[in-house]
Amino acid sequence: MELFSPAFFSALLAIIMIDLVLAGDNAIVIALVARRLPAHQQRLTIILGTVGAVVVRVVMTLLIVWLLNIPWLQLAGGLLLVWIAWKLLAPDASHDEHSNLTVGEVSLASAIRTIVVADAVMGLDNVLGVAGAAHGDFMLVVIGLLISIPIMVLGSTLILKWVERFPAIIYIGAGVLAWTAVKMIVTDAKVREYFAANEMMAYVLYALVIGAVLGSGMLRSKRSRELQHTDHPAGG
Image 1 (cartoon, rainbow, N blue to C red):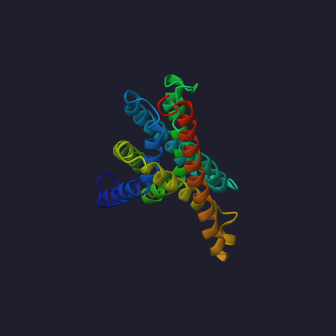
Image 2 (image 1 turned 30 degrees about the vertical axis):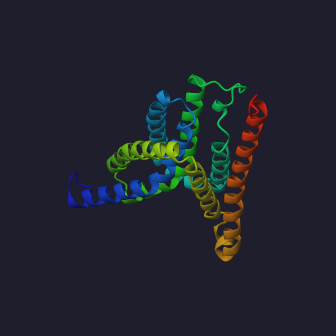
Image 3 (image 1 turned 120 degrees about the horizontal axis):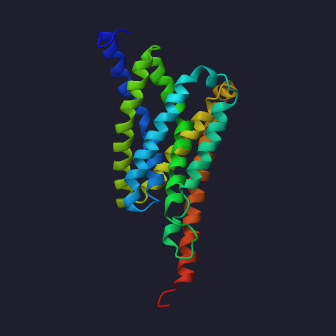
C-alpha cells in the first residue's frame, strides 16, 4: 500500500476505530491491577504494562496465522481470563495490617505480569481486526499498535480515577472481563457450532460465569470486612 495514499489513510482510520472500540477491556484490566499499588507506582504500572502489552501484540501479529491454527486457543484463553477477573476482585490486602503482602518491586512486577498476560489473552480480536484493516501492510500494523498505546494509557488512567471515586466500578470492570471471557469461549472454533445451535446454553454460560465471578468477589469482600471488624472491634 502506497504511503500517505487515500487507501493508506482509509486503512489507518479503520485501525484507529478498531483500537478505540477494543481497547476498553484492556484499559479496565490495567486500571484494576494498578489500583492495588501505591499511588506513586500506579502511573509507572500503567505505562510499563501498556508497553509490555503492545510488545506482546506485535509478536502475536507476526504469528497470527500460526496462532489461529492452535485448537482450543480461545477457550483456554477465556478460562484464563475468568481466573484473572476473579483474582482482580480479591480484597485489597494492603488494607490489612496482618497481611504479608508488601508493596514494593515484587508487587509492581506481579502487576505488570498480570496486565501483559491478560492483554495477550484478550488481544487476539484486536490483532485480527488491525491485521485485517491493514491488508497485510506491516507498517500500518505497527502504526496501529503504536496508536493503541496512548489510548490504553489514557483510558486506564481515567478508569483508575473513577475507581478511586466510585469503588463499585471495580465490579463493573470485572463483569466486563467475565463477559469477554465467555465471548472467547463460545466463539472458539471447536465449540462455536454447538453454541450457535444452542443459543440458550450460551446465555446460561454468560449468566453463570459473570454471576460466579461477581458473587464470589462480593462474598470475599464481605468476609474481609468481617475479619477486619473482628480484629479491630468497635471501641477496642
